[in-house]
Each structure stands twice: as C-alpha cells, then as structure tokens.
Image (cartoon, rainbow, N blue to C red; front, top):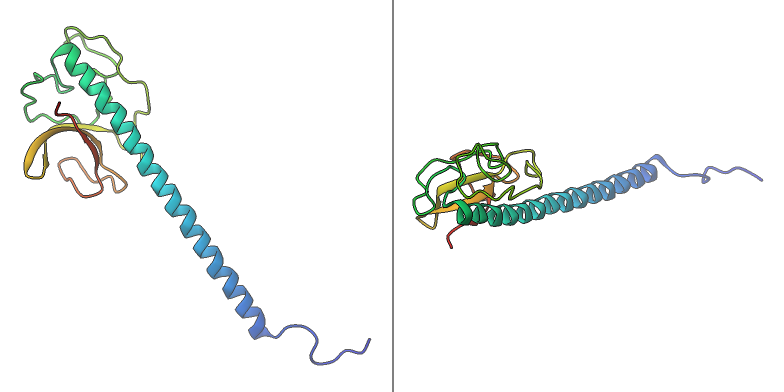
Length: 156
C-alpha cells in the first residue's frame, strides 16, 4: 500500500469531532441534573403532604399544633425542625394530652438536607395561614420565604 498525504484526519476535523462530543455530553449532563432536581422537588412535595396529614392528626387528637399552641389559636411560634422531639409528631415530652403517635416515621430532612418546618402564620396571598413545609432547593429560611418553598396549608 502506498501512503499518500490524504490518509488520516486533519487537526481541524479532530477538533470539530471532540467539540461536538463535548457539546453532547454537556447537554446530557444538564438533562440528568434537571431530572434529578425535579425528582427532589416531587419527593419533598410528597413528604410535605404526609407531614401535613400527620400534623392534622396530632391536632385532632390533642387539640394542639406542633408548637404546643391550641389548634384554634396557633400563635406565632414557628417550629423550624418539625420532627424534633418536642413537636409531637415522632415523640412527645408528655405535654400532649390525648397523644396517639408517633404520627410520622419518614425522612427527617428534606431532599436538600434541611429540616421540615411548621409555621402557624405563614403569609399566603396576604393572609396568615398555618402550613407545613420545606424551604425548597435553595434552603433559604427561616422567616425568609421565597417562591421555591414547598408547603401545604393546614386549614381544615
């Protein structure tokens, strides 16, 4: 076989192929990251729904919210770690008459590693409402609510 100058690829051709592979890999990484973030949001939404049900069950059984305030007057005391020992959902310090828990046995932290919260006076549409929630992907809180918070209203 006789070798000519036209055998093989030029440096420009090789650089174009490498750049195209890089672009495709970056697009694939972005898609995986986006799907992972959506999965975390969905998991947090599900956990907050379960926590809302557990919190309402605690309130129905004991007449008290996790901040130990009367259910008909939640006060303004927030609980920044809803699954702490004194909140009544996973255990009780004896201050919840009628306690029939534990009411929850799921993850203690949201998918971003932050505790779930209870806020009896969370502002929704200009009205103070009791909620259970997660500070969402950015983890900004307490008392610094923003659009990525995930919460469920507890008004019944």
